[in-house]
Length: 310
Length: 274
Image 1: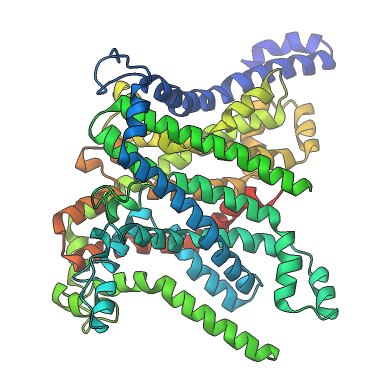
Image 2: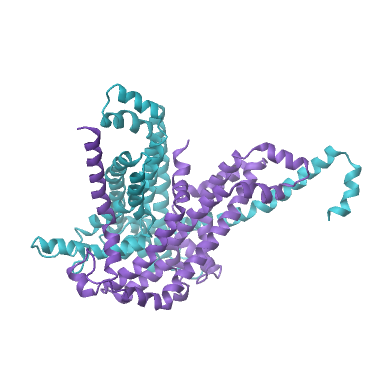
């Protein structure tokens, strides 16, 4: 190909050649390299989200074209459904526990192990281990831990001379048990974010404070934690968005039960939308999830952005 | 309290926490060696005899390998596609400015904010209408799509930092944009390719919701689905279930130890800077 065009190109000036190459090479690169990403992303991310909004206006089992338009009825049914209220409240609980319990634990441990020593590396590995496990594997192991006949909680109750509690079949205990597992599973992730940030805090700052006679606790409170505020903001964001999407752990542990007491928004839309082929109804729940995620992200950014400037 | 006693207390405290964190995993590993009767009286501690029978029977069962193979194929393909498609797009944004390129970039980064779960019902319909249900692609393509935003963000940041003089020199020598991408940008970017690749692999390896929705055929099951299937068959034979879970955890732990540098970089990379 190049050999046939070469003579023509030689006749023109070098600058022209560069220009032509530039234009054609650029265009070819854009036309070849960009579309795959655009197509895959539009088809499997953007379109489904648009579809969800559209489907949510219909009563539809997923077969044929949606034709039975019901307006806002799916949303009205959703807001009337007590299980959906439970799912929303449970999701809110997950957010609260992640921020109020999980993040402080992660921060405390990060402050204890952030320095680069061999023992610290080992502790970090152990604390991070739950995070790399698949949620389903973690869920199954903990189902065993909480099992009323075989589990570890059962033998604790027995050794105390108490009657065994079937934690995951007890609507009072099932969700707290799930929240425990979620803290166990994800605190290591937040800890890693804090460690990376703590290692970036200038050492002379801490040395100077030590020379002034500051205690470890004071250094943490007044130097280190303020210096890693950005990492705290980011991890808080992950905690919220992650909590909104909890699904995998619930399915092996309780599957939403007992008596629908442990649903989250996502297990709800899976159970009542897809398993029962109420695509329209489930899509309404998906839209609520979507709006919550975007809304929270927006307000969170505004709130924390302001704080950063102040 | 002097420094040494303080440090001793710190280490003792950390050992206690580490014990709590790791106890369920050890119980699972030990439990795989026990009989169900022994498990009932001794759920946590070492087995009285290290009987590998449960583990061996899972190893000899073809479906375990089938699940692992499916997961491996799906995860590898997702990594390959995400790296190629994501790096190609990021290269355009980093190297070529054209009208609307910023808008297109913002569009592709929208995925960073979207909760994947909100899309699953329409995704099921879409995958079905495309005739992809019960195929590997039903998992690979949506996974790639949802991983693209983060991949493009990280790739572009990395490509932006590559020295511009390099491109100018290559360009004067008649190197085209496409060739430069292939023979310079990609080889120079192995650290970020590895980081994103490892991260995408782990996400795909552990993914449950998407395969659950688009795979019905047991011969295509990824291992999280296979594990749920296994649990459904063995119900309260916890020793078998724990053996199965342990066998799926061990490769994950080995992989993590080998690639931890990249996993941690991928997790904390975008979040700590800026």
